[in-house]
Each structure stands twice: as structure tokens, then as C-alpha cells.
Image (cartoon, rainbow, N blue to C red):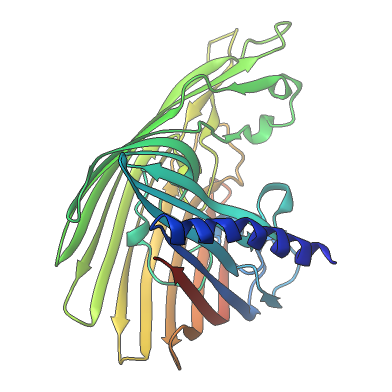
Length: 399
């Protein structure tokens, strides 16, 4: 039996008793997923790890960084499989969700491999596991075929403990303690001996919160984040580069039902040291100079970032829909970052989605991206046509 078949065998072996439990204990259980194939053409070059996505930060930072323009791509990495359950208990509803797609991250970037998306459970008002950060708004994301979507959207699936103080149909208030973390950009000093001995220290979790109010017109949500970022210089023989900073930010989002055929989705975010919570991730911390300071001639600082997107979803007929919109993200770079550091990104998109039958989508999408460097005047653009074939499925089990 091959490794893929073994995985599915054990996966459904685990599900079997859960399904049985669902029938015995009045639990609802859903198996869901999507088989998705993407094919298209990159008119310009992009990092090969992100060949089937439009990420402006991964566009070339100098001429021919990723080779010549023009590449055909195919992939099934957006394919997804998951399970959900809901069980009434004396302490409230018990909900669980586990799903994964095939998009490689980290050392697996560019690969087609298993990637956990949600692994989360909630009993009553208390939840724990990996799921959407309380700093983000899943419902404001536009319907696009590009896996990554608008570069400025707040998007981070984080491991967390959360408390739903209010969870009504038209109102939500959620607080969460989330796994800490940050990225750093040493700029032209990134290969220096001093910085090789500087290590991150995260003694406190990130604190996030969101409040949402909704109605027939749509919803509005405000979210905030505060995070502690510290780093320790382990080499005391030279400059002491130890330091700390506080990351913070706010995220305002809204969905407006503008009639029966048009839905508007908008989001704006601003903060310092929160870049790892933004979809097109760039460094949270950069190096700045400290003239006249002989013990610390340069030091880390939280980088300010702001961005927005605005999209419209249009329903032309019962079977034909579109999304169109624009997104922008800007980083306020520190003076010692590389001249090639990411400064500003732009993202635009339009698509047409056709539903020939229920649970099937045929789509064509044009994507545009632009990257501007910090201070050398270089910029690069991306233009892509993507065809997508989606086959969705869902099966619910309940007593």
C-alpha cells in the first residue's frame, strides 16, 4: 500500500468511531473538501517557490533575479480536505475543526505537501488550537482564485487560547492569547558576525481582540493586537545588540451588501511590528542607526506598516459571478535596511466564475502585482492569467 493510500486509510479509520459517536450522542459531523486544479501563465518572473500565486514581495528585487519572463504553471496545491463536528453538552456546544491543504510553507515552500490549516476545538466560550487569529476577519476576504489574495489582508492562522465573551448572531467579542513570533531584517548587516549571535526571545504571548456588529446590511469589525518582541545578544565581547520593542496594530474591516447583486468588501490595517500577521509577510523588525552611541551603533526597531484593500463581488446571473478589486501595502523602512528591501506592494485582480452545476466552478482570473524597493529606485511587476477548476464536496452525518 502506497504512502498516500496508507494516510487515507488511517485518516478514515480515525473518522469511523467519530461518525459512530455522532450518531450515538446527537452530534453533527461534516466531511468536506475541494479538489482544485490551477493552470496558467506568468508573463513575468516570480520566486519559483510561489510560482502559482501572486505575492508582490516575491517579485524580483533586481533584474533577472528569478530568470527570464514567461512560464506556464500547473498545480493542485489548493486541494483541501477537512472535518467538522458539533456536540451539545451541559457546558455548552463542543465544536471541532480539522482541515489541511497541499501548499508547502517554510522549508517545504514551493512543494505540494500536507499543510495543516485548522486544528481547533471550542467548548462553550473557551477554545484552543490553531485557527484564524482574532486579529483577522475571514468573512471580509474576497472570493478569488489566487491562493494568496490581496497582499495587505490580515491573515494568520495561529495557535491560540481564546475566549468568546459575546457570541451572538449579530454581535461578537473575542479575546485571545496567541503564539508569539516575529521576523527580522538585518539589511546590509545581516551577515555580520554580531547579528549571527542575536537570538529572539518571546516571553509573553501575543494579545488579540475583536469586536463585530452585523445585520442584514453586512457587518463591521474592529480588531487590535499587542505583542512583545525581544532579542538577546549572546556574544558580549563586542557591541551589545540586545533590545526589545512592542508591536501593536489595529484592523478595521467591513462587508456591505449593496443590493442583491453586489457585495463590497473593504479592510484597512495599520501598526508596528505586525507584518507577520499580514498576508504578504515582510520583516517585523529592521535595523536603524544610532549615531554617537559607541556601545550600540545600530539597533532593532519595529517597522510601521499600513495597507488597505477594496473589492466588489458581482453576481451577473445565477451561474456567473465576478470579483474585482485593488490592494496596497506600504512599509516605513528603517535606514539600515538593504536598498533592495521591500517598501511597497500593489495588487489588482478581476475574475469570472462560472457554475455549470452545483459544487463545480470554472474560473478565469487576471492578477497584477508590483513591488517597489526601499531606496535604489528599482521596481518589478507581475502579470498572470490563471484558470481554475474546482470540485467541491460535503457530506453531513447527524442523528
